[in-house]
Length: 371
Image 1 (cartoon, one colour):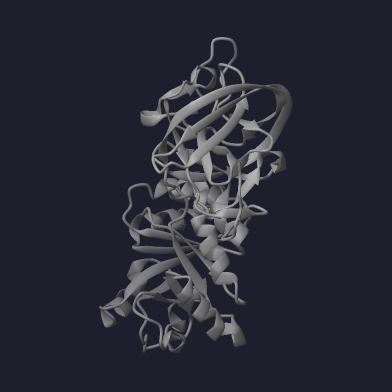
Image 2 (cartoon, rainbow, N blue to C red):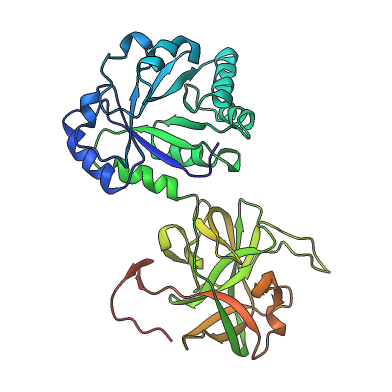
């Protein structure tokens, strides 16, 4: 298996929308185009893998493979030995439809031995895919799994935290390529973090703060970005670290006052007060690596609050308002955990400085004064 996540688009039933779908696929840098006719690859650049897929077997394979880079057919490799010998410059892979225990074993065998395995799971459960991914651990080949829609594609990319190496999704209209690429990128990425210097802390009295309880287990060097302003946020750590008076809650971030911004997928911001069960937020570690996580609930309660002001090396100021309590913490360099009530001028904390202003959470280039 590989680390890169691949997007393959099946144009076999795109009909009159084929040309428009292909243009969008090239714009989105889709990794592979899947067809049954080599003529469909005319004009495609060498940067796109051209895949011929024949689910019915070797009898469907034409004598002339055209510009195809890869041909995928059912059956073990010995069945296609003559075909491979006739086309030494073309890669070959195996298609497996998984419907029972025997075909699941075929899929595991293909994943271990084949350079390319295209797997079609006919039942909605993802347990068979988990079994194949586990069986293929350490194998050099790539697993491509079919998906009926982008929601399923996003799940396939994340199964067992490893995910399938790629997703093959049928395209029928313009927008499908963009949606598939979005599903692939939803797994996470990186974000720039900066070191902020605390300039002042102020006890500001009572207010409402939000605890964001997610459906995931945060790591000790991980939290979410929170700030009073859209252009400056602080990395608030989860309750993964032990406390003297209560058990750890590794799914929770005591995030800040309910007016605060946090970051979700695709760089969009949300107010903490807007989050609810099923929302997405971005988990961020001290190296800036991110992953989207789902919100299980948000607890908004009245608590004493503390205001923390800090400044970036560029001179940009940042503010964060937290619950005024020792057990509420933020992250500093080298994953240091800093109690909010013990912060003092000169201390260093980690933050992020988005460059765009916001309108309903989306970045926009317009005048906006926040203070």
